[in-house]
Image (cartoon, rainbow, N blue to C red):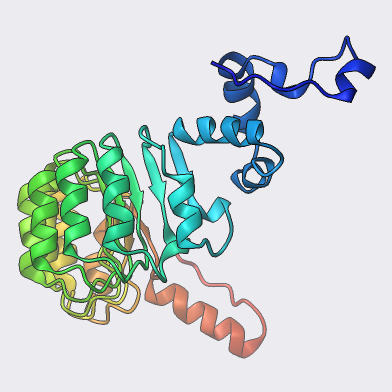
Length: 301
């Protein structure tokens, strides 16, 4: 029900003009107006009056997607608590701007109220722990996309819990999760490989060919794999990807110094997007930079 509003002088002066808040909330304002207003503006709007505050809170309670970046580069803990206090239908949650202070105590209650979450981004949230990941894995069985980039606390045990309890997982970002070793990635591949489509293991010197080969053999639907800076990955792992991953579309192997062009050529012929140029192309670019012109070379030879 809509809260009653006291009369005002403007009502008397404009008897035939409906005030904004007189429009139907459920049928007009929520689905057709507030959905188009940026979150930052909504926060300002709720300061206008109690009625506006009630309207905004009703809108926030029905949110399906919440990205803290829409509020600003930094968001205080109290503000996040107010924004998500009544939200119980979230499907997407991104909290990167809260990385400096977000703790288990802040996140776990939000996860408990939103079991239908499908996408969660926690990149850089270094104050979290295995407890938060356990609550996410156990309480959100529909989870499909998860970013844990630069979360140093993610270890093998935390990843095992995720692999055991997230049957719908398709996209996982483990960039710079440096505690993870081959054994943890092998377990992930064996438990959830059939559904994985995108995986980043970038900037992890502990990941090697053993993990990549197991991913290749267990992830037939893998489309995107980021191995940037995985110094222990070599040509054997890439050859296995070429053999077992027929739908691979992109591979990132920059700074993987043990990956030879001979292992990448088969993927190039299939049209896989690789972030490392062939040696001949690199030589031509270098020659152009040195000579100041582009030499004509028949690349078909």
